Image (cartoon, rainbow, N blue to C red; front, side, top):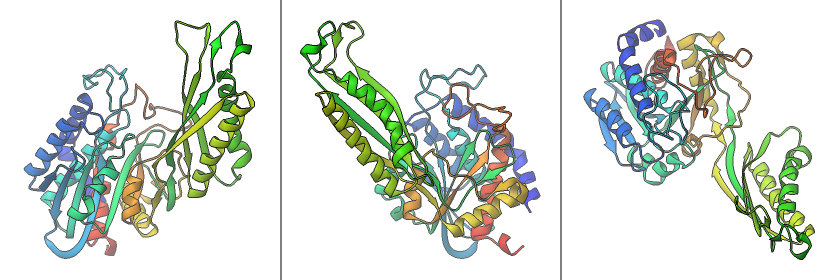
Length: 400
């Protein structure tokens, strides 16, 4: 069955790749995916799939009913947005928009789900209903959360929902997944240190917030090293520092802003990190005659795969590439995904598909880098995985 599905996908593999490269060439960032959404809606409609638009501004949902009787409803989700990043590739489908780039493979995710939609629309040999969910704004702005708030699962009820992401460093023809917490929560924090500032030649006449800020940056790593239990996984990183004016290095600034991110896999660790960031900032500021304020924003929750749906995902991947090429117990990853919001509402599973290369040998550029590109060699594999998953959820593949 799997071999036939892949063979039946091959005739329009070139079309899927062309869609992927066209989307890559014309990247659109969060909630601005108008052209991409038009392409998705046009393709779905041409294949006879009912189309609904407007959730989270640019979201698209395609609905396909199987020709067999069945009441179960399954959602399959792909993200559509690009990143604010300058591409450095020189191939023909490189971005035509300065400062915008598909550096995370959402162009490929969209194309793979479209490939599966085309196949299933022509062969709806299943019982129940499919919702093909094309989501905007995964990169930081929580498009999944917005779609849910605007009625995604009310207007398009789902019993279960699935997602997939490419993974550079995992070889072509391989999948990875795990039951339970698989991706970390993602939080943003800002600590603002306040002093009087002053003349660079007379620091004793004021209070200098750069001193507690510098100590704080180093102290953030004591949270992981001394407060987090050894069996927990937490990452705290500083990503932005702002103070003073470039043209006035002789002025001690009155304010220093330090911003960063925190990743963890449990509510208790989120609470701990937030508490310790505030304590460290305030205590170090006070020791230097300054003050500090913490703003902590809880953004994406932990992505938790349900046991039953993870088992089906493993079977679907094994049907696609063979059981030996599926890792069912991948180590949890510190990256975050707003698909976690959907998994908070519905049972489901999120799987990684290899984009090529290995951790040892390299061979591909990582996501969120200016030389990244989605590997077209996995488009058919990803589409076949979706089809196999549908057969397990709504068809008769499980009895084969």
